[in-house]
Image 1 (cartoon, rainbow, N blue to C red):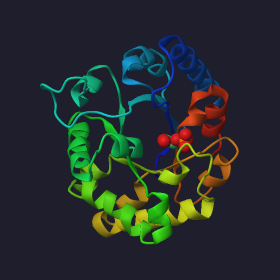
Image 2: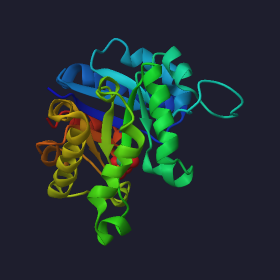
Image 3: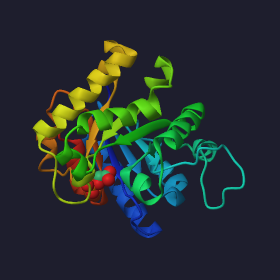
Image 4: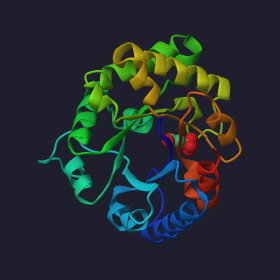
Length: 253
Ligand code: PGA
């Protein structure tokens, strides 16, 4: 059985005071309302993670995530945060390869392969993001393009390591735009990616891989998206900044 995951990506939002309010509200709602079959993840700015860990720790199905980590374990990389640092404060997940990191910080598939490696070496679960731009979708070949992002950054992994990775399909044209992929468009991509994983790792491992959808997912469209056979949850941006809406998304199963 693959894991159902609803992860909130706060991006660069919230002051400390606001973060404490949002995290404590989410923690209470998850404890009282969300089935323990669904893992809820909060990816706050790294600055707050050790404080927010206190809210997540007592709740079995609530975890915290970083939004990025560096590909090296330590060293002269001013301003960066490493996987061992995240591990040392109890972080369990790390988002890697978000399209905003690829676009604004020029992250490449090769660099992301190194980030995936260091995350796994430190016992962190990567939430590996992939997705095509609108131009790529309109030009065709977008299924193969997204599959190649997985090939280039993940297919060097052993089956044992690959089985620890969570994938998030996020069409760039749907991120923060209010335009969601239709459930048919999302399902088409998820099924294609699962088939691609099967060619490398076999059907059983592909069937056990959690593939999340991200891109303007909200409490209204989540039930239909999550009902699709190959959609195993969501990576939620804007709607994760409101505790009630985010919890309702997690309750959509
Ligand atoms: P959005 O962001 O839900 O605001 O579209 C999703 C994401 O970037 O992870």
